[in-house]
Amino acid sequence: MDECIFCKIIKGEIPSSKVYEDEDVLAFNDISPAAPVHVLVIPKKHISSLNDINEENSKVIAHVFVVISKLAKELGIDEDGFRVVSNCGEAAGQTVHHVHFHLLGKKKFTWPPG
Ligand code: 5GP
Ligand code: ZN
Image (cartoon, rainbow, N blue to C red; front, side):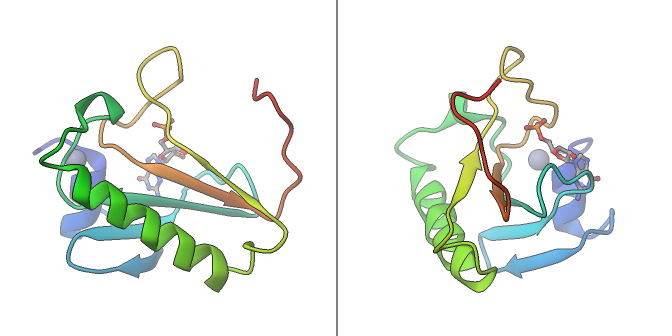
């Protein structure tokens, strides 16, 4: 997707603070962190939101969660606890239409979310 900001980050057209990269997945620090640890984990393939997950593309989403589990350990948030959020659509406040998972940590979270 030509104008997608996260596709541009994947292509290196927009700089990012990378935390992890492999053939299918990229993780980078959120530009406007909502917690001391705030990493965005995304598939390199453009998928607009959770509304567009299907049998064909679900493998990369499963891999995203393997990466999240590894990163949680590496970032030292696995024992205290962390939160993973994916905003889908307008009501949830999705602003970037390339599916992404916020990995948030080093903060005490409240539930239910606002
Ligand atoms: P959403 O609101 O769609 O769930 O999350 C989008 C996230 O992307 C926001 O937390 C926002 O701060 C982050 N973001 C938007 N543009 C950029 C950017 O150019 N670089 C980085 N690293 N994060 C961005
Ligand atoms: Zn994209």
